[in-house]
Image (cartoon, rainbow, N blue to C red; front, side, top):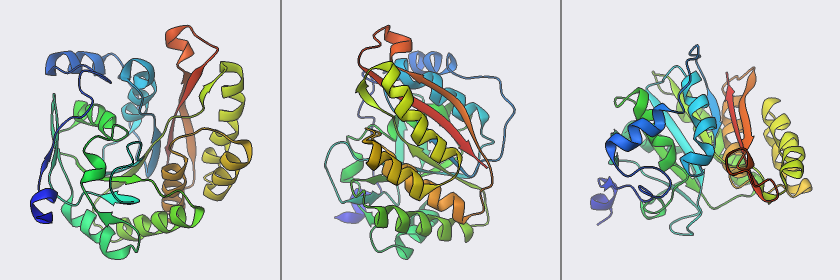
Length: 273
């Protein structure tokens, strides 16, 4: 039963909602967010996951900066409540209107073999959008790159640290490049002015490659950053892998698109080398 589930083709859950549902439409949509940038070898990144009309500018800027690895490990929050606390798919493919990406079975199984809390479970991924909206940007540049999808409901500091250290250990034991992307939006539904103040506090900790500082800042300042646990785990991983420098690629809020600055969502794009 489980083998049949894990070898599945995961179908798009939010096509036609978060992004264009047609191949031609999505290709054109993504192209509009791509920047001409020098490519860099990147250990980790933060990329947003709202509808592309709101967060695509930031996500496109992030992926435009990355020298593509063999595999992207994608870590995002679990919005649906389905599946295990920390769920990974270890085989199969993710289909999109513009193509499909295969799961890196070797790395995925290496991760589960090293972790006490990351469990094989595809059900958490079936309707979750936080990783799905990363895929169109990856496919724009390559259909050969592989992915390892992980979602998190667990958000204790210990869980974030354990996941990060597990990922670092698994990546260290691969003989090909891996980039770890944390999918996260920033402050939700506060004024643009307040969101920017709060978000800067979290972004500063990310730029310092300070996972514990990010975690404590989000909790203390009550920052409604939905992917703070994936971001914390990613920071633990890249710090363990020797990350030295981080850069803010782009920041904006939904108000910059909608014109409504009273209740916004913040979007930050960061790369870590």
